[in-house]
Image 1 (cartoon, each protein chain N blue to C red):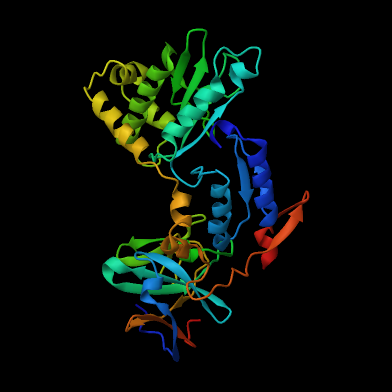
Image 2: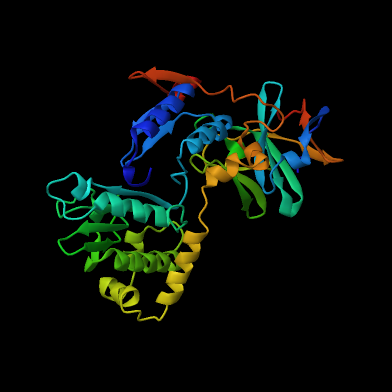
Length: 119
Length: 268
């Protein structure tokens, strides 16, 4: 996950059961839209911006998730642009990338790390 | 709307729903009506109204049977020799919702003039004086290809039997995302082999293929009805899991008296 990023504040966004298993959902954090992914089969959670930088639609939370040689990734549902959920890099080689966010689960709630260097 | 047939009352409902939710309307190539531009949170409400009016999901979002296009047939056309609309509706209601390696399109024409373009479909029927000619593995799209005649002058029951077998054989053996035309082009032995499998039961699998299809037909359900009626599934159709707000990033403009999304370059 994203322990390397310094988190200034954890924001509780929703209950674990509000998120589908092995898929994504979108949370509203202030004016931001953040895609949160529950890799239930690995008991891992990841978060990134909801906007796909390719066409700027708010759709990544509805993307397909999987892994590419061990790296968890999301594929945009529009044109299948794929991004690493570890560092936000573009796995298809295009120049645009995405922001990722720290996420943690505690006592049945999902928290997003805000005020970090990454966002 | 199976076969593209729709009553005036249902047509009015489509217009009323489109007006209420400000949806872009277009007649599709498959004889349906596009209602585009709904937000994800509006979908269950829109479908609730459509289902109440007697509509069901058209599965345009799935790798599934799409439409069975038809002409007006003997009922309205002086040239037609069979009831193509009636048979198209029967076929669409039999195979609706069936998932396949790729989308499946079909058509049914009332005479050899072929107004429904059945020879450009995954399976197509063209009426003859004696019954129906069944064409398979046609395709429009990027690499157009005419369907190949599987059998001629069939009665309706035999058509259904062969289509059952054909579709299940395709579903069982085609690689994912392979349309019937591509699958056929890779099939060793071509149409002669396909005829042996589907008509002569050369592989001894036809009873199983028919049983598999009977199961699919019997277990059909309208997926949107299932969502509308289930509060848990409806929850998936919110933009945010932690807010009832809609996506405020959507930007629309107007063109030819209807709304449409702005071009993405303009968004910057």
